[in-house]
Structures are given as structure tokens and as C-alpha cells.
Image (cartoon, rainbow, N blue to C red; front, side):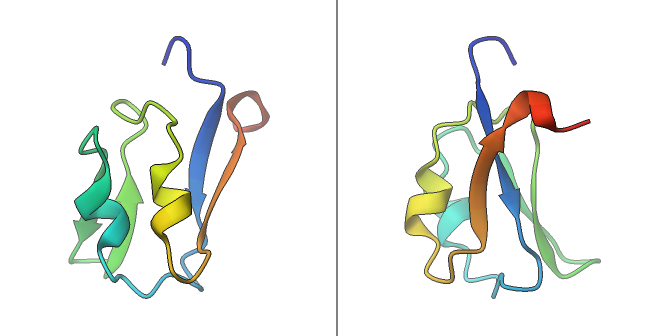
Length: 70
């Protein structure tokens, strides 16, 4: 996404699927995958604001440079 420099990455081992990140994401980019029983981020919609990293009580979401992915 243009203008975005960082993206959130979820550590599924630490995530407790509390839904705070999903509920507070202003872009509605975070969803709960019931089949896999995990939280997922749709990077087509994520603007990289980092709210999810702040609200995660387990510290399971971190922001990394987008260019380092891929």
C-alpha cells in the first residue's frame, strides 16, 4: 500500500485471540479465521497505523519494515 512503511506481524504462538486488535482496527483489516483458529491481517486494507500493536495485551503483534517482507 502506498505511503505505508511498516506492517504488523502476528506471533500466533503468543496470540490468545482476544479480538482487541480486530475490534479496534480502523481499517477493518484484521479478521478471525475460525477454521484455523487464529487472527489474520489483510495487508490489502491495512494502512500500518500500529494500533493493533498497542492494544495487544500479550505483545503478540509487532511492526516491521514492509520492505523486509517478501
